Image (cartoon, rainbow, N blue to C red; front, top):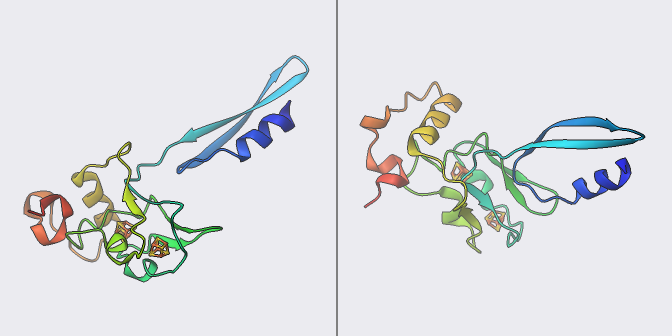
Length: 141
Ligand code: SF4
Ligand code: SF4
């Protein structure tokens, strides 16, 4: 039972993280529960990625790296370019336009700016009320 469930879990597709694995004893059977916490990530790279690498150097947060089968975005570092540009820099250079917002997992401009500030405390990024349109896609006309 444990092996079967583990094998099944390994095939799960999840753009978040597996935070904990908990073993539960049920009589003679051990069940492993994976506690999955979906990360707050609004931009992700789809399976259409052709591994060209064009997006990686464009990210102001160093959020993009080469994964096993495609490039990936670290959700803890993506601010959707809030604080830097009025567009998502990765999507702007992607030849197949596969850096997409996840409609099921939207993040607020406030949260994204807070992340950018946390990642770049030395940059003196403005507060939300003073954020110019050039530094947030949310304010693009
Ligand atoms: S949207 Fe911006 S911050 Fe997020 S991964 Fe793309 S380039 Fe980096
Ligand atoms: S630019 Fe697009 S196709 Fe190229 S590595 Fe990045 S996500 Fe993949």
